[in-house]
Image (cartoon, rainbow, N blue to C red):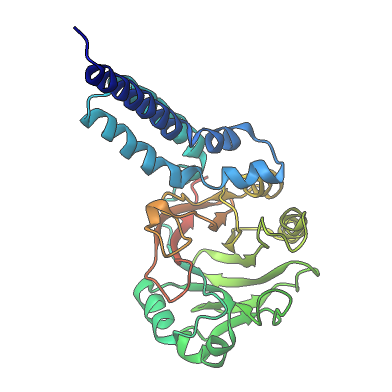
Length: 327
């Protein structure tokens, strides 16, 4: 004979199962809009925002799959594994772009690029980070007032320097600097609306064009089409250059999203892999977003890309090595 207590327990178990499956469905499907946004190629600003977060979603999807396996929820484990696979397909162009084939016995140039954050006054940390990377060329974005005052300390050993004009339009006064162990010749100033600095270095690779750039945020906007128009201006600069070229800095976009696709299509540049995220430093790199990009022309080959030592900024620096590409 079924008692009221047994009926109540049966109802509670049923409700618990329903709640579990609803929660599992929500957890498995949560990254789906991100993957679809990245795979769609749609350039609308709200779709583009979602596409920025595909990389950080991979680890939680993997952990969710493992959790389902541990509690023997085989169906949900398969569904979660499928979602993980979809995310990996979406993030593949960002994480595993072509590195190029290095020319045998060609010299290597190491580049350090970083958004220092304009309120960062930790000069010792900035200097220590650069020393640890031991680069040949340094690109610093958002060099604030204190860092500018102590630039000789920060860039000791890099006597050749080219700096942008001071930028006061956005959050606070800052400028961008390229410093090098090799002689530099400044490139023409960028057009209004684009914050960048460019130089040509007499490097072991020959004449090496280097551009440091800082694009506006995708949201909230300075102006809605800011990133696109700034990338168009950068394309105009790129069109004036011949020979090996590196463009690095804070693009406020991952390489597989709208701006990255524009850079590839219009400038013919190739991104360095972005497996480890650069922003924000409050999160582990595996959960970060790789908005600090390093792009190269096809006559260069990428040897390595890694994150540098923290420098007091909310962005991690990127250390890359390049050589000439094989013909």
